Length: 238
Image 1 (cartoon, rainbow, N blue to C red):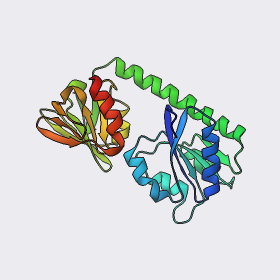
Image 2: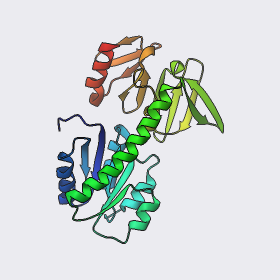
Image 3: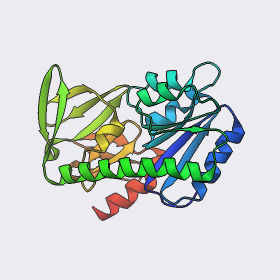
């Protein structure tokens, strides 16, 4: 898919035809791009960890692990729209703060209604976060039962440690229970960029860079294959 979209999603469903239908519905919209379709929930773990996923279309009744069980297992789940052939899971779905609950076969009209709910919720949240970031020069991290107020300018880089992240500054390092994707949304876009599934760097702290890596305080960070184009564009303008 070549279109540039504001949001990304993945689809998890053990029925290939169901994934195909959702992809076809999404092709008619401009706001969101499907970056993956998976027949098994566990196959989607890497995509959820490596990329920014705004929305998850998730089937409920699947072999091995149900969609509801899978969602509960995620430490930092994206927004979710459940898709199922059964109506009797609706209460469980909405208890997990699902945006919507689509019963198959999913008509385009019903699909659009669900997408409008997502766009309204996500856009409002994004606008609030953007305004908050614009009006402050720091971020607060919670670790060791303390709140650390760290200025954006003091952050060298942030690395992912599975369900934790490690924030590095010139004076200290902090380990927090959080996701790199979630923290990325709270950082000013003009100064920070994700260069790898495991690293976000402060562009103002980069001392050396090539097409393959960036260097901060004599430490090299490899630029991930999926991030090379975006990183090269940002570094060329910085």
